[in-house]
Length: 129
Image (cartoon, rainbow, N blue to C red):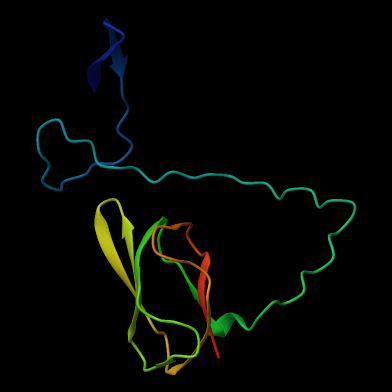
C-alpha cells in the first residue's frame, strides 16, 4: 500500500506493508492503533541504600488529595466527629470542583491545609484518629 505523507511542506511517498488483513469497518483515512512494545531494562541498584523512612502516621488514617489544585473550602476542624462520606473539603482543579469526603467514620486529628492553599496529588490534607 502506498501513502503520501507531508512533513514540513515536503511530500513523501512511502510503501506500507500490511501484515494481516483487518476486515473491520473503518472510516476513510482511519488507521487503527497498533500495540506498542516497550522494552525496559532494570535500573542498576544504588551502591548505598537509604535508611527506611520512619512511619509518621498510619496511612489508613490519612486523607490524601486526589488532584492537584487549590483548596476552595475546608468544612472540618480538629476534634470534629465525622461519619463515613461526610464532606471534609472542596478542591478546585481546572475549573472543576472535587469534593473530598471522609473515607470512614472517625475524629479529625489535624487539618494540614486552609482555603486558598495549592495542593499536589497525594498530599496529606487531613489526619484522622
